[in-house]
Image (cartoon, rainbow, N blue to C red; front, top):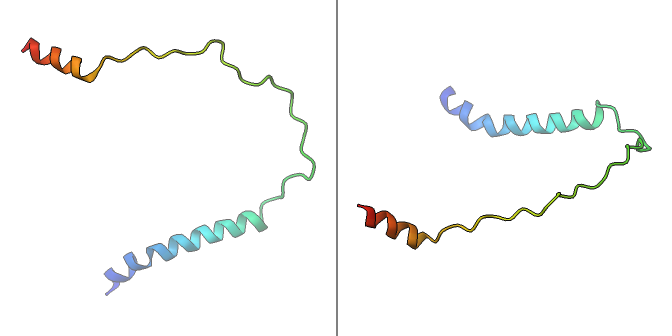
Length: 70
């Protein structure tokens, strides 16, 4: 009988753990500061050059060449 209780109660134990951690995060951990701290100004990310992908060979030609070698 105990072999049935453990697997059946696992989802409830996980749910209780998640709810407990959520409560702990809301009640126990300190709240973030009211005013955001000024972050240093950073330049927005811009890639140096646009990357171009090499053209892939068509599947049909690759298979045909592979079969022709045999």
